[in-house]
Amino acid sequence: MRRFIYVFLALCGLIAGLGVQSMTPAFATDVSGDAGPIAKSAGQKWALKSLANGKYVSVEMNDTGANEWRMRARSSTVGSWERFTLHTNHFAKTISLRSEATGYFATAEFTDAGEREGMLRARGANLGSWQQYEPSWSAPPAGAPAGSYGVTLKSVADGYADRYWAAGDDGTLRATAASPGTWGRFVLEPVPGGATLPPAGPTAAHSLNVMTWNVCADHNANCGWSADRPGYAEFNEQIRARLADPVAHEMPDVIFFQEFCEKYAKHVEEMLEQATQRGWDVRFAPIHNRLNGPLLQKQCAMGPAPDNVDRGSFGVAIAVPDENTFYERYDFTSPPDKEQRTALCAAIPSRAVMACTAHLSAGRGYDDNTGEWRTKQAKELRNLAAKWEAKGYRPVFGGDLNVVPPVPEATEGEGGPSTVLMPVYDRYLECSQLGDPDAPRSGAPTSNANSQGKPMHKIDYIFAPKTARFTRCAVSATSGKSDHWTLYGTVALPAA
Image (spheres, rainbow, N blue to C red):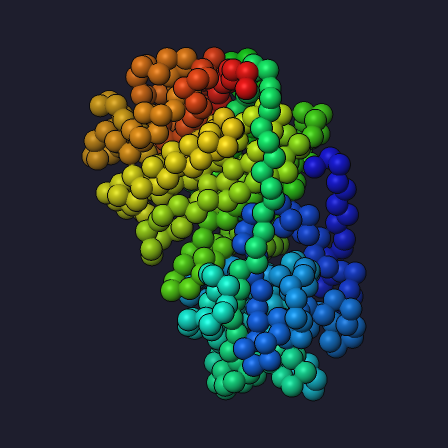
């Protein structure tokens, strides 16, 4: 937001790639310059408690020298030094803990000697093998908060595999144990979070300009990004070029993004403020992987080459006016062995609008061949919108829903017309219907280019209550560096 100034400090001695595993000790002032972007995330925070001494693991921000940023089970309460987010780049087969205090990943000092041998320090900039651990999940102890997991953690690093985390007599964590033993057993506890929902409105009748774009920013050779993934400058350039809709050339009030990388959020926010000369708030929510344990945030592929930098988690994002103080992630029911899809909602109280971006599971041999899971997710999306209506907010929502509209001519390969979105259309109005709820449930294509480079299928949507009406609905002339075309809608909302 414009009212906050983030000072990005120098990144000293960071890991240049996955193959580089050690780094020169950093000074305490060299915490991650990504602190601002990371703060934009709606990812779940966790605390790690030692079952041996009953203490929470802290990152020792005041330690210096050999002990700087060491992880130590010594706290009775949970603050920023005790909060972590959980990540994976091996589909939940491995887990990595990122410190809220430093912005860096827990790293074992395997090649150090003496007091620092095997010490866990929150200093890893990228997910190399020294930052990844194989979890073994178990039931939490009696009295643990709901949603907790018992866990032991074992290194998977080449040459240092099968070394378990354990807390020493003073609580210092090291990855040196041959077995978990008494001191190598922990419980992960979810940390409560979230803001209070402010009252909605009242507001006069007004129009809201909405844009949605699947930016294809993870790692997809079909999208044309440099090294198959964008850097911050390239990413902002593409979004800036697509802000004005092709019909009225008006700037958006709300933007839905899908296939977005976490650390772009703050950079996009700053670009939007410069481009539109008004304040914005950009928020991110991760898509997850799960394997027997908790939801782990899926990481975006590192890059762009040759920097191989960590771009944070993979997921969805939303841009709204900077009056926003309330945002909430919703995790859809998803195939258990596939990506756990998500939605993200953010409140605009002065307009009595709750804006929500979503990305549902995909067909065509990827997540959901039969549409079973998308059918469940579409109903959950409808119910999510209805929840906000019950709280006095008008839901305006959409994104990449990965299904074609429920009309006979909207075929998806050999799968025929989709009925997945019928419950959503039954209650809400879609952009392509303009002001008529009885208009065909169709619309201009937004994805999957044909041989002439034109989109073939509509799978991107913008919905609003039937008490509103769309006065404009348009698709961009080109897809830019994505496999989706941008969809724009202007919705006229009544007074509330």
